[in-house]
Image 1 (cartoon, rainbow, N blue to C red):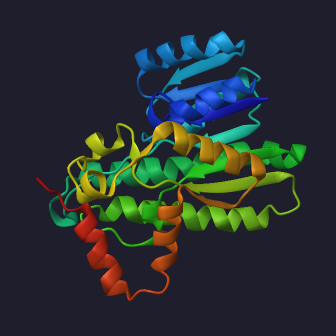
Image 2 (cartoon, helix red, strand yellow):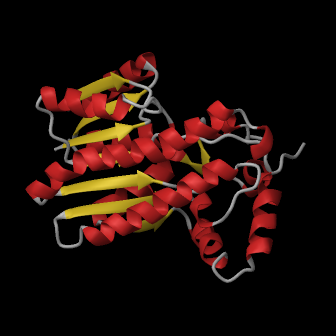
Length: 257
């Protein structure tokens, strides 16, 4: 069995890579940093599995096809696809740099969709495979001050649930995994380390988040929300007026001293 994990050099992706290696999956790790990937590979090889690393920025237009073609040329079939790579950016949409806006869309939506489309047909033909698309609890409501990020995760949720339905009975499962705030490098990169979400509400350890995601994937669950608190919040927005949901979402995102 071979598992492909994007965004595997740290955070949830790194923790998932450890879980797959411990369960004797060969792994293909993709991230931008070659140095970090080399460190992770050295650690995982202690489990006696094959580890392939590919340093690649999946936000660039041709990257997903390049990755697919390379693995095809090396005769490396993918049994499990983990679309974990993604990023967010804090700020009002009107003043956000264009590269931040389009970068989130390219990585969080376009690359995820293209990788799924490229690797799915072989799984469908074998009638065996698993795909996990990492969304977020952000998928369940609008997100002022992170409008594009929240919208991209809503896409991931809708897309994943739809194709999971299309693939019923095919032997291929699609899991949309929705973590809440997690202790990774994401908050610093996004500029939300000082938000109420991380300062007041709190974040879960990446190890525990990855364990829950791994379990949901192996069970073939279509939707998995990480943590009881996050599940309650995600369900509550269904019954709350949208203006209130949006106002609360902004309040949580705002920075505190």
